[in-house]
Image (tube, rainbow, N blue to C red; front, side):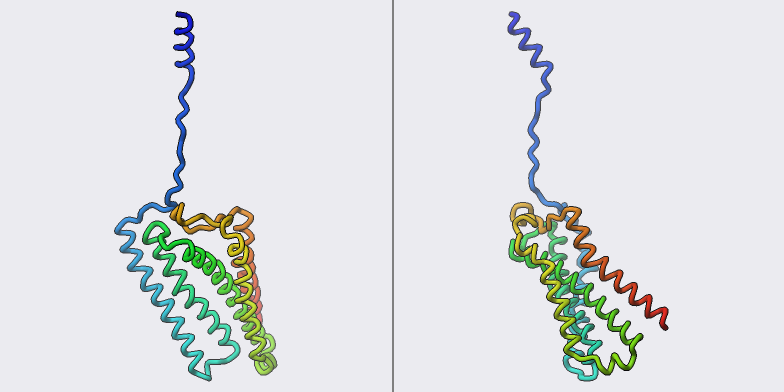
Length: 223
């Protein structure tokens, strides 16, 4: 009798612990039909404009000898970067948002993430090179324009592209530890901690931005 009462007492004092299972589901909710229509109306023309507009710039640079100046080589290379971003990154990213999950597999996810990070840095590097070129034209004028070799311009362009590939090398070499598995999570994302975010933002955004602001400020003062 005493045993039964003590058992009843213990049962009333113990709060049942219900295990909580955290499912690795989608990071995005299923987009609504309205959102998808807006996405198609806004983004599709933007993608087409990005691809077609930069294609025309490349075509003009390749076919017109008057356009193929050393300064325009930076712009042509930048147009190639933007063309690739529109063709691959914007297209795949829009499909990702439209579907609400990543449906294209691991290989496409790896390509999308690495190309997005790489091309973003290459684009920022080209903008800094254009600013540097304008700065030299203003400060050195005829001497710089006359003595500027095409090889020097091409070496700067190649360095920008090589730096963009180098900056994503950790992502390529340590893919399993730096990204989520899109086949499990339905998400194509990089596992960024705060240190990695600050490092990436400094290299790809803040540093080129500071260089451009400083160069254009000097140009403004000189003019």
